[in-house]
Image 1 (tube, rainbow, N blue to C red):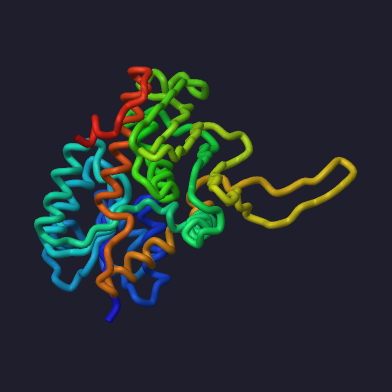
Image 2 (image 1 turned 90 degrees about the vertical axis):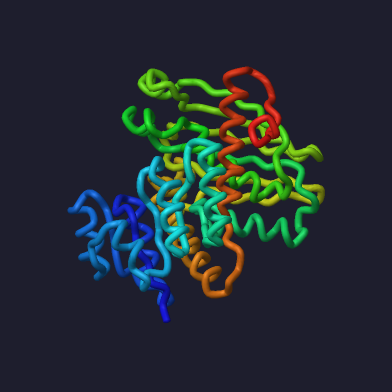
Length: 334
C-alpha cells in the first residue's frame, strides 16, 4: 500500500515536494491545503488530489503523512497538531525562529512518538552526499577543515527579509547543518561577522547580506562558512573538506556540461539560477528518504534534534556578530 500524503502549503517549495511525491511509486498525494485557493487548486489539478483544509487532514485516518511547506511561524504549531493526530511529519526548515519554541515543539513530538523529519535538503544533494561518503570511507583521513561557500544570485525583497529571522536563521542555517553533517563532531564555539554590502534596504530591515562564520569543535576541527546575498555569476554552492590524508570537494554543477574553447579562452555555461533547479535532485531524494524511513521504521534524518542544533548555531552566530566575540554553543543550548 502506498503512503498517503497531504501537502500543507502550495507555494513554490510545496509544488516541488508535490512533484517528488507524485514521482515516487510508494507514495500518493491525496490532499492539499492552502489559504490561497488558486494555489491549492493548481496543485490539485496537476497532481489529481483533493483540495481541503488542515482540520480535515487532521481528522482523516487514511492520511499517513503530512508535508509542511507553510510560513515559518506556523511550523511548530502544525508539527504539534499533526503529531497529536498520529501523522508522520516532514517539515521544511526551520521548525521555528525561537530556540525555546523549538524545544517545546520537540517535547510534544517526543511525547506522542511522532515521526518527524526536517527539510535540510542539501544533505541529499548527490554531490555533497558523495563528499560525506568519501569521508565515511576514510579516503581523506580524519576531518580537519571544512569550507562551505553559499551565495545567492540576488537578494530577497525587503518585505521577506523583515520576517525571515535574519540571514543566519534563514540562509546560513542550511550551511550550519551541512557543517555538522561533514565535521563529524558537534560545534563548541561560533565566531561570526557580518555586513551590509549588497542592498541598503536589507540593513534598514535590520539584517545583513554578507557574512563569514568560523565553527570550532572541542577537538579543534573547524568549518568556515561564507555567505553573500549576491553572486552576479549565478547560484554558488560549494564545499571542500580537508583531512589528514587528503581532501574532497564538490563544485558547482551546471545545467549543461559543455565547454567551448576558442582563441579567446574556455567558456562554460552559467551556473544554475537558484535553489529550485540546483537542488532538484536533492528535493526528490529527501522525500524518498522520508518514505524509506517510514517503511523501514528507521530513524528520521535530519531529525527535529538536527533542526534545533542548526538553529542554536544560528543564534550563537547572531550573538557573536553583535558582541564581537566567540560564543560557546552551551551559552545558547544550556
